[in-house]
Figure (spheres, rainbow, N blue to C red):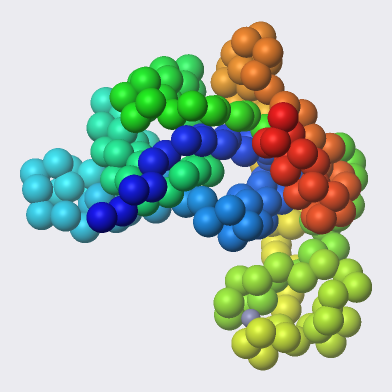
Length: 221
Ligand SMILES: [Zn+2]
């Protein structure tokens, strides 16, 4: 029998382009933690053959946000499934609202999770615009290439041979818009964690390895 017991929840917050996806993957690899994405959980759930699964599928297909009650049930159920398999879970894209924050608290109680850490990868708006404006995306495998990386100058993906291009919405206006939207949408959750003294701010403008090191250091404290 498997005797793994879930101990840690980690939430990474940060605007699009702050590198939270990369940092989540690095943490998941290093500690063998699960990387929980609410978007993926919903899509998996929608494949089921229950009345609720069909309802969720219709909602996703219509591009509507799943209601809080359904999201709550799916979140708790998924965390329950992962809780016997992993010592840690990294939350990605959840919680986004104060109601969802309460769902996380419920999961902590229900699964007797000992530690919950919340990181915010802060990035300078202007630096982010400059950095993202230069990044290229593979048109085939969607990998991201920054200046100085092999393949960047030749516009050829070193993984799949696909063509690298600068995405239309990576222009200054698009980046600024996504940044501002994120900050606005997550302000309540960020402020709430901050006033509880739980928000750990990480300088997301540093190189990937340094950001990773800072997160690891805070996890050990
Ligand atoms: Zn590629």
